[in-house]
Length: 365
Image (cartoon, rainbow, N blue to C red; front, side, top):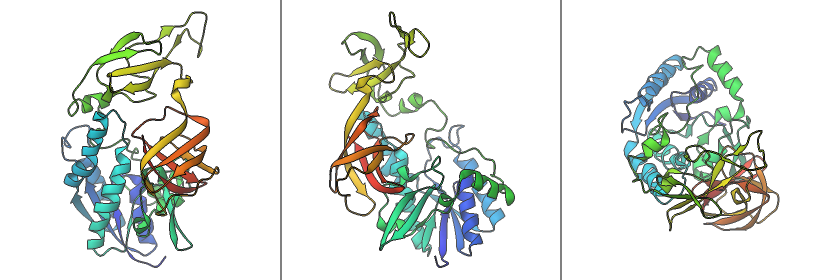
């Protein structure tokens, strides 16, 4: 690739720091941008944006590049957080990181970078971009244990054509080694988890601020009420912790080396405000062989042709599962999984792959 002016999203973490270093070493003109996406209580112990900016600025100083602090908090609240709350109120479980990438990092940030005269932007995501036959493809990161293509599946041809992912060609251990070799101040900084507006605080405590509690019954599959939930918005399918009903002894049966079998959320009935729970991780009600998704986004710009050679993830922390496309168009698609999928959750994203190539995905309904 020809040398160009590249604006790098510096988050304060080691991945984006090494991204900036690698691009400068290659000879590109590199400028750093720190994005502030959240303002509410960001001075608390739960949101580390102030610390992250200090780290990003220190990295820029070591590498020898300029850094700009840009505030996208208003856009984030309108385009990402508002939908986050709305989805939870509707009983679904959204993934705000996916929406943040589509609306902020590769839209607002990209537009800002172009105004600065950039020809490309770069981030520390573990993914790759490849040009083939005149089209840009989104590929998994070389380190499949860190691959983040799932979160990037809504990127389109125009966005991918202007994006670089240097650490996507490396393993995480190599990134750490590079950071230490050039004495980056954040070389050993712990990877961030989750999204800033929640941070390390208990999730239910955070959601309490924005969503009213509407208690109701917790029923087992026989229809017996065995507990009370605090509000359907506060639970997700497959959830085991925080149900407040403990284990129930199964006569004459031992599972997992004990006498008690854990409960899992299997269904949320919004019409009756009832939470359905079942016992055992492998319960049939937690398994699905089909899923339907809407609001589809295809990297190539068009839906893939039906085939039985694909694989998909219906949640991030999951191995790719072989599947076939029953139907697909510009707005929605249906998948069939011969082996079944565990706790398929409305609001989460189903992302489709052809080997290492991420084809796109949609929101599970």
